[in-house]
Amino acid sequence: MAELVNKRVVVGVTGGIAAYKSADLVRRLREAGAEVRVVMTAAATRFITPLTMQALSGQTVHQHLLDTAAENAMGHIELARWADVIVVAPASANMMAKLANGLADDLLSTLCLASRAPLFLAPAMNHVMWGQASTQANRRLLEERGVRMLGPAEGDQACGETGPGRMVEPAEIAAALAGLFVGGALQGARVIISAGPTREALDPVRFLSNRSSGKMGYALAQAAAEAGARVTLVSGPVALPCPPRVERIMVESAAEMQEAVMALSPADIFIAAAAVADYSVADPATHKIKKREGGLDLRLERAPDIVAAVAASSPRPFTVGFAAETESLEENARAKLAGKGLDMVAANWVGRAGQGFDSDDNALTVVWQVGIRELPLASKSAIARQLIEIIAERYHAQHST
Image (cartoon, rainbow, N blue to C red; front, side, top):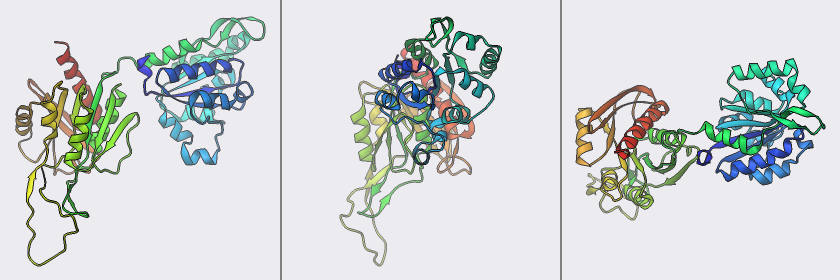
């Protein structure tokens, strides 16, 4: 189930004898490559120990809503944001009733209410409880709100009776979760993205750089990971956290960035979103340059052209360049496309209020050999998702011929 690789799954466990199956579910999810966090209700800990679930998940089990230590690290809001999907298995009649009515009196119910991640429930209870009008009303209400029900299955129950109410098998639950992620536009593709500025040393305390914040490149890394790609981000010095499910390599100079990128090659796709210096200082001073009368002459030399080097490499990835322009946007983008042998160029205006460097918003003109697409001003995260869709479309078109 490659679809679960690097996916973040919260497994909620409620009270019931079927809780023993949750251990197998966690094991299967980990084996499929998912990251798993387990949340247990107080009743669940009477059937299976948190220590067991911790050993299987490799992570501390979350149990308490008002936990000072947890709030300092990953409280219910952080955990709700962390999850790509939440599955409650087993889901008791009590938990279904809570969720149907918006009650949040423990960590698991609060987490489900606080998250926008898809929610799966695997009900498990006595067949009479399952058949009760109240339980069925809760089921219908939850399904109407988009909650996905897995089961219950029918068969022998712990009470000695037979009927619907058995929790479906862990393999079936894992397969259902994997199905949620089928069809990622870049599923399984290996993507390298460069981001941020470079710094070219003048002396041990000074450098030449630019105003790039790295926000666009980091947004692209997150969008590519969401599309199912295995992403490595080669970043210049920025004050941004690494996106989830992304491997990051920090560098400083253009030469270091080129070395890191070329060492990672070959890849399926390379996106050169970094604002790499065009020039570096030919002979950086080994000691701090002291202020003195008159001017200061610096001899600059061409810095490495990373995107051109990648485009000329063999095997060659689908190569996307960026162009930050103050004039003749499309003309300059197409000149870069042809001159460096790229597959695509994403060009944006700089020096305009509300977009480009330092801004949270951007607009792009995306060009390739026989096409152009305009991405109007929007948040960089939204623009990144749109650009990844275009890259995936052109990448697959190129590889289907």
